[in-house]
Image: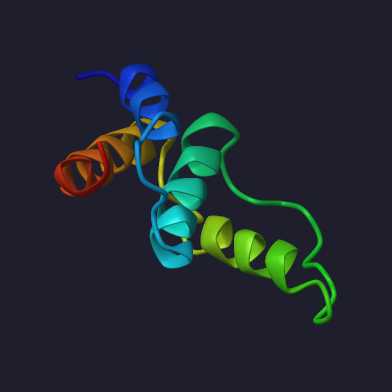
Length: 83
């Protein structure tokens, strides 16, 4: 399975992953498609944006190809639960 296929299938899960699981996907997706997070950290009161920023930032330094491979592995881990 390639990255784009995994990303499309993850978007179409029949059940919604937990927030933590969503953030795992989000962080790897952003790292795979954009690279390192160079945006300013959101303010403490914007909890959703801060959580997404942190999920992306924790993958800093990971190559896009490595992030794609990790995203596919994450998809395969959760697919039986949510597909």
